[in-house]
Length: 197
Image 1 (spheres, rainbow, N blue to C red):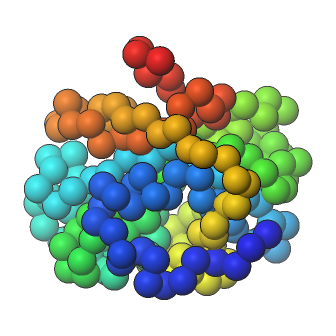
Image 2 (cartoon, one colour):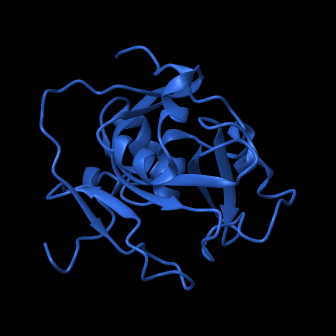
């Protein structure tokens, strides 16, 4: 394990750049049940003027975290059953974020399997709802600073050159043609393969 990234890391990049920079980094959550972590292998960028972005129509109680400084967590609830984890990005007050869509499980895999109710490691964290279940992320971590425990992002120094691919986002109705999804090409833990791969 390495140290969390510095607070300034998140503000160095715009939202699209950050979505790419997060690929290959590690998401860690420290809980009473144990530490779980995974290498980020898939992200999606959501921009202020993007019809698929929660903040595109202004600030609300639900999306208020998106308007905080870059590097805060934005955790929301969907379909009455799943949480999704995002990294707030861009300038404070703008309302942009990067959705983390898939991880390659690393630490605490038995705990992840228990939380998810599956022994299939390839199916543990290959989707945003699955990530939150496996790592124990919920609304209590909304607004959390991702440069400090318990939930944080750190460098993942494995010396491998990253082959990052780009495609339209998944599961959005509006703005679905925008190529704002980034993923580690040929990685077996991404949520969905590209038709061009």
